[in-house]
Image (cartoon, rainbow, N blue to C red):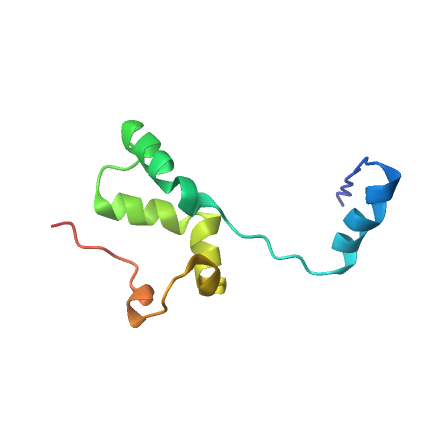
Amino acid sequence: MCVCRCVLMCHTPRKEYYKKFLFEPFPVESHLDHFLHDHMVAEIVNKTISSKQDAVDYLTWTFFYRRLAQNPNYYNLQVSSELGHDRVDDD
């Protein structure tokens, strides 16, 4: 069995602040939407993405994609039935 540990060193006044995250849920959201264009360009240059479908497939592997479904209001996403589609036509 593997045992993992994390050690966080901080000033004493900040100890209680960090300690509360052990016992209270803390949502973490993606900020990929702020830099999505940079990531897409890099993947196109590396030839990871060469079609619209590749771009959709790439996005489905991101934390951003998973958080969109979990918290659409945070990303100003209007929920529609089209979100269920997992393929994009390459016209």
